[in-house]
Figure (cartoon, rainbow, N blue to C red):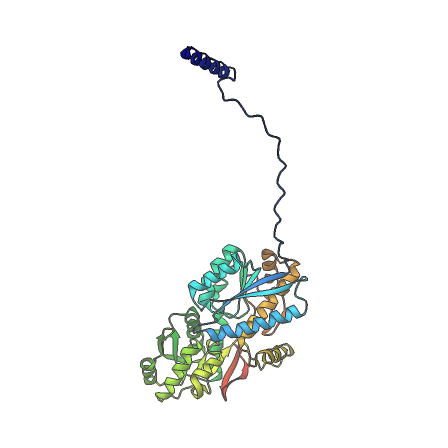
Length: 404
């Protein structure tokens, strides 16, 4: 009897499943629940600043220039914001130390572009560093203004080409090298010149090339050509060879630290010939390192704080009042570069990278501390002339503007 009852129950279940088309019975649909209210979003930060980047050597062998630029650009930032900023917004200069390192400068520039979202960049001041960062700004389409990089290819990779996003507020090496040649041949009447250059620096090599090309036109000859490498400190061997040539002038197309050590060691060896160099010697650290040995050294450089123009003296007074030191050409160039970018933002009417680039290129007769700046659209270089200085009583004394 139990088997019969179990068989009947099984038949009932089979019939029930067949009536549902072979599918399990569906649960009745539950009433639709209301959609959850959106979670409260954090308040978006107010877009009340326009960011501009700066990269430079705030540490390392070229730190003296980077620190001067930091002071110059900070002064400009504070002045601009005190006057209301631009387009109704404050500006913020995001500053990084690239240590004068070709790898680090690329990392810094990428950080400024991709993380800090800057509209344009001030820097670098050295040709080698500027050449390293140039492909990055070109690819990202962000304008950069170099302060003191004078190698022609910084803005022009080839004579008939221009980097669309790279500019400079300094003159180029043909101008500076021509000024050093003019100082040696025309001003100092040198006939036998020894030259010392740095094989590790594009700046040094290109300045040397221009000097060798232009100096002979004054009837002089190069009697010795010696090389160093940045970071070296003992130059007695090359100075002994230079002394044997008895030059009446020694030209240095190198940076201030090595130049100061060379001059100091030259005097210790009894070399009495005067020295002349380019803007690479233009730093207070040149005199601090070389001491009294640097007295009388001639320097062909970008700018002099003694320029009596009202614009220049206004900047010099403000700089000394804030930092209690004399500005050098790097400070003036960084100050000018930031003002040009802000003026370009104002003329563009918006903080748009491409629009700002276009207005930088369109800059005409901008009243900068270092002179009226107009960018040549074919080269992205301004037309400026060097000045000749001489170390007197531990300071750079203005002699005259060069004629080359």
